[in-house]
Figure 1 (tube, rainbow, N blue to C red):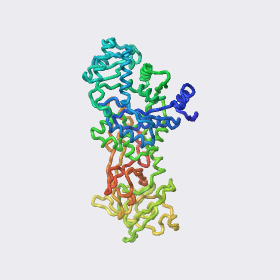
Figure 2: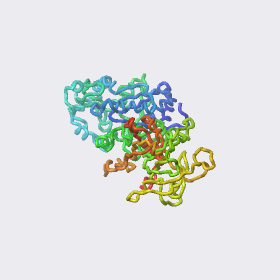
Figure 3: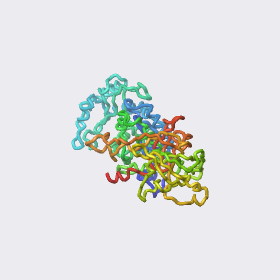
Figure 4: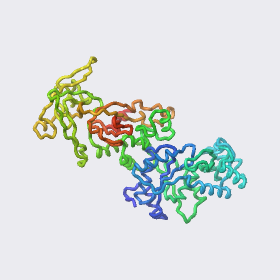
Length: 560
């Protein structure tokens, strides 16, 4: 049972049902994706809702693939969906497919024809659409609406056997062409498709439409609550009508209820639009780290916990709204802050020579892996006379608010010594190539000396040049510059592609990063959270930036 004071409106519905004809043992939920693409962050909310209800009520949750369109569905997508749900940490009770029920659906359809509640229509799809009417005008009955039952039965069998061409006939339910709900105006139940199915091969030449398949599949599986996004609210009347035709009062009757889709800013989640990004080479594939797919988020470095926490935090609502992507980024920062080891990597290196440090000396300094996790322990970091710091961490001259390295001033090197900048070397264009410093030998962090306790305002990360590990770093940013790229009727969403969504650089890291494995996550101190990409090899590590330490878009979005 859920706690009364923290229920969302879906849970209130379930609690009310449990006070009526439902029992805890009768509860069953399902997640029903169509295997025609990869799951995205919007699906993650639905996954977390359905499987979360399963956990709350100790009820089974089926994974059912809505595989009724062989033209778009592939086994690749089935495998990817299963992989994503498992990665999110959920287990389904049964793996089902709409195609499991093709024979039962066909038999029920035959009975509807016999009961004069369905008929074969031999018009084109264009004519059928024209005859549907408008929300303010009733539709026009098909000239085949009163076709003799035996003729419809014979034609339907021919359709099933592949004896007619695609588009020559459809099976329609006979409901009400004057209904205020246009979905009730004799909806199509079956169409002819001469295409192989990823599970049934060429056994079937007719395939059921979504509205006919979905509710009946729920009924076969005895799903108690069929939870859909808000665009399916008009479908509920048809869902119930189809159930009425097969319902046995001795069995549980599924209930469809709707919740609002949560849209994410600076992205698109339409499978058609995501496919266009892939096909036109804007991204490298469905799992490109800029994609809102679960596999893309995983590759970028998001954790299952961060996505589940995000889904829980935005909740379940009755109205659609646009969730700022910064909220998703906040959740991954919060999670990685607890678990990611801190390491030092320099993205834009500037050489620093510590002139009073012996040339032949090197030492290994102790560094804490994660101050948020005492069990994470320490590691050893090499230090030598020449180091790299970030270019932006040095200025020859700067105002009092610049607390990094500048001539004549001191900073502390993280886990190491206090240094002072004394002079610089420049190239022919006047760019600083080397900074010459001196260090306070008594100021080593953790040494307990009086000098080590000395306070300086700036602390910099660094890497020993002698020990530096070259790594490829992919600096990913938001894929779109506009918060709602697909909301502009006068512009194509592709016009808002961010040209700076990916920058690839060579960075220099402390040598401990050589031991990391694919999907290991770290915080590059002062820079952000990064994960090891699958393109890594023994010779070269590749890191994807998950998120910077701070939201660099906040001010831009406020001013836009």
